[in-house]
Image (cartoon, rainbow, N blue to C red; front, top):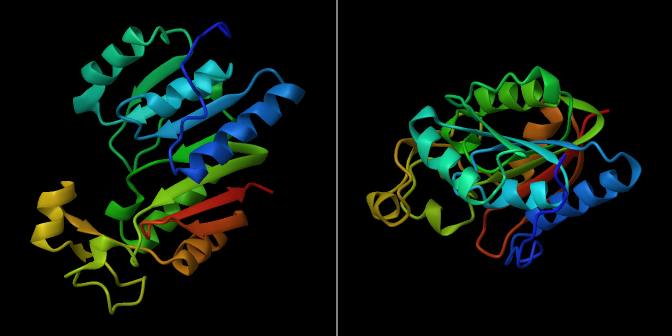
Length: 217
């Protein structure tokens, strides 16, 4: 394991409190067990994967196969080829990397909102099976109380039925095409609980998106 990476500032996470919590969790685990394994889903710019690697973790970066060359190029350019492994998957498929499982930390950056609620619940449950007992799951998801809800047809639907395209203005502004399920903080809490993990905390960001932390028990 290479622990000699250099980075300007690992803690430059802006307003992303979920990312900060995940990095802090990695440090805590490194102090007890120096062999920390992390799965990050949909980190196209490899920035978060690099931060985990700079802390000494072995990282699996899961992403779409059409971005494989681009992402692997970024991994090589960052000098992380020994610590970050890219696995192409078509989400909601999950990577099968037997020598890295079970993971200490799984971080889901994107993807869940593009699934109906019932399917997202199955994915969270499947991810939890890839965690070691006591391992933590960090989930970032788009919020129903964010700007994205303007003109969104699913606003009045219950979360189990909420799956619709964003307003055309939002699609153009953020490039989020296709049907999506936007979440309230309570929706995310219930998703995690129904998937069989123990919810440690949920919170809503300044911009109305939702974050959650759960643990496999």
